[in-house]
Amino acid sequence: MANSDIRRYVIVGNGFAGTTAAEQLRKHDPACDITLFGDEPYPLYNRISLPPMLRKQIPEAKVMIRNLAWHEEHRIDLRLRTHVDRVIPQERVVEADGQFYRYDALLIATGGRPNPTGKPGAEGAVNLYPFQYLDDTRAISEQIDRSRAAVAIGGSFIAYELAEAFSSRGVETHWIMRGPRSLHRIIDETAGELVHEAAEADGVHMHYGEEVDEFVRSNGVITKVRTNKSEIEAQCFAYGFGLTMNVELCESSGIETSRNGILCDDHLETNVKNIYAAGDVADFYDPILEIRYRMGTWNNAGAHGKVVALNMMGGSEKYHDVPEYSSLLFKGQTITQFGLGTDLRPDLEMVRKVDVEKKWYRALYFWQDRLVGGLMLGKGNRAGKRKYVEAIKSKQAFPKPEWKSMLDWTA
Image (cartoon, rainbow, N blue to C red; front, side, top):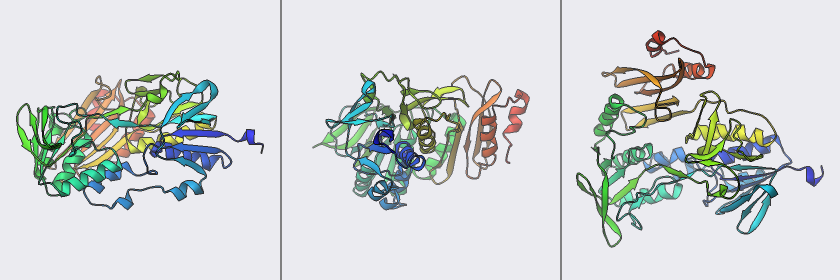
């Protein structure tokens, strides 16, 4: 094969989407040239294993998924600690550290970075942490060992994972949020009460409707957080306020972005031919749910990586998965989500069922008589999930009188 016939692929971002795409490209095209860039000093690690690592339920070694030898074996040129500065589509090159890398197809899988607190006393504080990366996890874990009390800030899943880790490690735990309940964008008041009970059963002090006014410091160390309602003394503070997508690479390239990420179609291709986006940063069109959105789940990143690799090679594969997410909620609860919820589409109609004794909650979301999503709370309350997901994929219409009976699906 002449050298000019070898396809060159450049992937920016070595998370699950980017590394999966690289693996699939090598699998389907043994001769191709693959360059994979990563900002961090580590090959792929499992972000969903960071919370159990923070709880000291698994060692750090279990978090690592790929090593340098794997990349060498698969002939993937991994460039760690490398920031890609710009894309020049008309020349089909990217620039990184003053060098230019040619591509036939480019994947941008740069994910997002934690939003800062933006509060007085936060900047430069040595015991205030975001929770997104392996280095964050190490730093928080070390600080927990030095702490009697810890504070998790935000109403998000990230803040929940922090509160759970703090309480499981035996420190006095406070969870502050400005909303009326945790996870208030995706759960209603009834489901919120079940999460509240699970948190309190684990000894977490819940603070609703509280906005951080300032972090009080002494010699660069935060000694307490002052809110609109209270003051809490602690030694460890961490937060989850959502992410800002890393789209700076698209500036001056002609690649269209939105407030949500990099705009792409149901093939994950951007408006610029042969440039694709995948994972957290992709604001993509879902042909099953018929809506554009961004989905920051691990499973979605892997699914994107497989689809986008085929399309980078010249295929025409549409994204065809229904996004799913499951997690423990402290020791006493679990949550399972699939498809759309009212956080992504406020006009959805809902039916729900609550079993107070079992602490079970189930909600189904409909759009124009089609099932498009669901939410389940409660240990053992996952039966029927596969059937729901298949119903979403089928785009079948369900008459409104049938909706309530669908809450009892178990097969």
